[in-house]
Length: 257
Image (cartoon, rainbow, N blue to C red; front, side):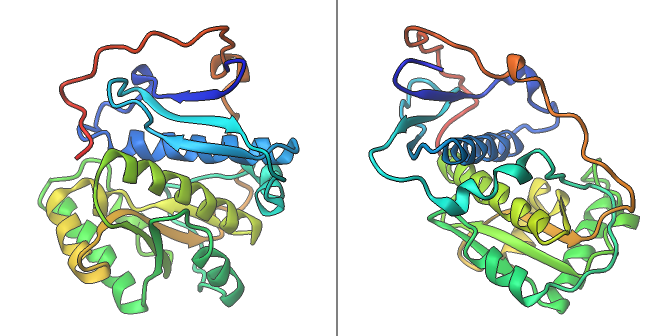
């Protein structure tokens, strides 16, 4: 938190070890940017967002600055859901994609991100993609027995696969999960379809030809009685500074392409 802006930075100490491409980290960072936009709107402040403004600083995800306009009331209305939103890895009760939820999801994505509702046939195939990956031992995180429970799934796709586009997909993912929560549902990521390269290629050909699949989300009602887990204390996330941090040296493993 600086006098004239908020900088959102990636903390590598909190990144998952099994994320060699940084895909999950980029999605998470984009979701955090979206949460900051929502919080600002709820406080009566519109912000301009600049993603990855400094190529020399690979940990700087975004910069948010106050804007001279009224905040978006649709963003402000989501503020109460941020603390309730859960991303379930386990299976959820069967749930068809309701028309009003489908309409909200269609408009939830940020610019340059598409939200695509999967047909029932594609849902069945998406389960097989991940099951096949698990059978071949190429994904350690997949729990196949939990993936057949949710017939409603949506895919988030971008034109390319740069770090910036992954961050945009993370912003859209946060909005999608919040809209699902607003309708009383629960969202969860089907991670194998994106994390396993061979499976991702199959999924992209069948779901979003010519575009890159960034997230596959299943929609359901979640486990009965499940409560959101505790959020990280604000003091561990937000730091106040009077001057800009010196940019760290770029990592050789991170690039925008």
